[in-house]
Length: 560
Image (cartoon, rainbow, N blue to C red; front, top):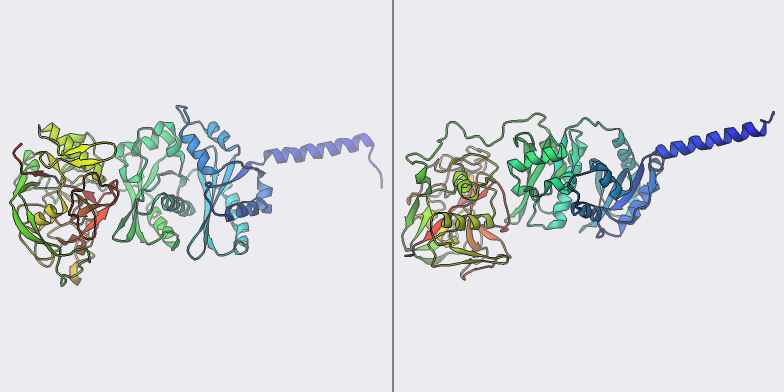
């Protein structure tokens, strides 16, 4: 065999070496990071196994990581720059892409969550989550997971952008909130309908001042602003609340052009990691609608613009509730009663109560904002927390020249019983007024139908005939009032009460005691009929904001 001249051989060798080096340089860089510093011991093992997957090595130049994803995001949130710069974000990760690994020990198994993110845009390119008992069982799935990450590099870049905001989960705490949001984002990404951006809105300095920290307080202006800031056509928001031991998730995809509702869905769960399939089901519901639909804010033409026989000004009218004695709670024979509805006698002083739930027009006139999901001047205001309601009461009192009922500091809220200003009803006042002299399950008798109030008619009381499910709030005063001329005491929106929830009722003055849940009463458009009963007691965290909780005001019968 003929040997090549030495110089030619050297040139070919150098050419091949440079070619291979050029190919290596064209491969994107990849860092593998733990989601946070609190992941279980399996996290590092999974990262090592992924980094050594041949498919990963062929597609990326894997570089070492010296921190975790959460710390980088936190640093980006606190940076001083006035504009979001993709290069700055990319430098924070020191890689073109990152694979984020999180493992968690469950009651009967382990959970691994793997996300792949473009560090310049913070787009979630692909993700996977699986339960496993031992690492060796997970190893067989890693090649397919690695291939899914690689395939995402060639994904459709023309998909509509969906910003994902963290869900507010007061019942479960921050850990499960993070899991819930991440798992649902991955499930939606699997649909191939959207390009997902779970972190872009929260780290962008332009988002400062927007109500985007929790999905429960998102408003139309903030939805539109998020669209402008990160050029996203849609935003995913949601509530995750605990009502009587059942966790409920409500998720919504909104159009950032007009804050219109594109799709919505809900699921119930006990522990989100127990049944991961429900998140895929929710994602399918949310992504089945491919074109915007009219926001559910419009008022049906068949319903009145304002309550019958009333003028705009009379919407503020209060009803005098006379002193008396009544039996609070429910008898043991009442269908669907709960153990905390213990019957006892209560002596009531006279007071004044709002004839209607506080409307959006009233709330906006005082607070100069309208946080409600279902927009309409004479619809009840909703997506207001207990604190929002207390602030409204004081602000309205000052505006009308009354003495504010509450003293509010950074650490507590105190009720001045001698003030004549607006306040929230106590739980006893609410039930006394709702019953209006009745002792039956509802103030209408022992049944309540959807011609009498707004609730989910698919779940009637005591097996009666089903009725309408309107899927939203209705104009206040749209149904017949109770015997004391109070409207919507059953249904439409739950109403905040002053009291902290206790199974045996509250008997002491609860000034400043806001660590536990606050009482909500009356049921809502979303409720089953049994939760509308006069004695039914529900509760929610004081900071909860959701589309099925509003409030009405009362005033004490005092001289000043």
